[in-house]
Image (cartoon, rainbow, N blue to C red; front, side, top):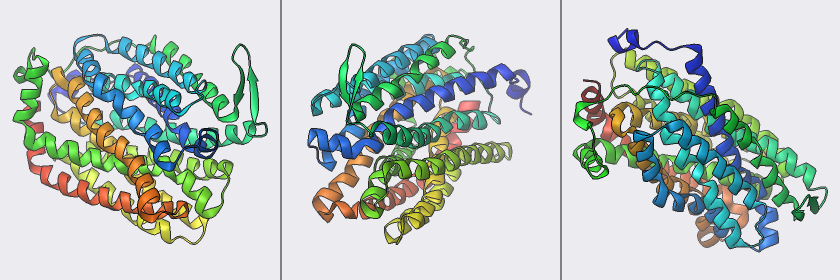
Length: 438
């Protein structure tokens, strides 16, 4: 046990905080990913192409990051992080409900931009808080638990969303108090906005932790000085950010288009897709993040300072066989089985990426660095993941029924590029972790 671990023991309350933050992350992805199950009715009502739908699922979120991610990250380094999260949850829940009021493409696009405040306000503050509650050697498991919110939120969106869509689709219109008549897909947005209220109440029970691991090399840095500090470590951060961010294209491509793929290629209903794919994500997602966190902690205790990157490389190897087989599957059941390794891999990468950024970065600029990391994910992974698939389908294959081939091509190319970047980062990253801990 290191000196830091001995003086900084974890308690049941620390894990309670992780649970609350994980639930918040779950709700943010529930609000985000529910759209993937409603592609067909929204396209029918608003006359949208696959490319336009992809922009709602991706670009609408990343635009917000351009303006707000870094300021919110800097606030996370300097102010009460709990209050930032409470404000963010309140706003994204209200904007999710606003999606239910949208009657045009641009109204829905603007409302989806507001929902994007979720990760922009949540993750920089949440990961910074968790890092202050948990020392190295056990931090991986705590951060992995938080990152399980991605797959849990997406899984619940699929299962719960599929059930709700099946239920509300029995009627084309629904009448709400004050608001009046709304379409079935609009009604779903109002329902998924409600859990945000519970998150706000739970966050009021969370205490702001004392800051740990403050490095003398990063004391009292302005934002420009923080950028200069990161630039001095560009051999670490450039390949790390590029490798991890491009790899998130994998998850966003799958989450956004697998439901539509099963409907078009295999003729499944959204209820069947939501249940089948949702249960896989709910099972493999937590398995992936806990496997990643456990492996990282074990490798770190064995003295390997680049454990996060090695686990991320392993996750790519696990994912690829499933996505290669996806367009070759002759039945929906076979394609669903292929989604098991294809879902474990991205979950492991999600956990590895945030743990890597936290562990290689001094405390004073963790919020800002995490915000920049999320900005990169937004501009590369979130924007390109859904849209690259749609562009291939609309303009290369020119056949909606070949969407599974589009998914496979995008995921394979992204995975190979990510593996090259992470391999190049192995040695610089280990040096950076040693410098941060000293």
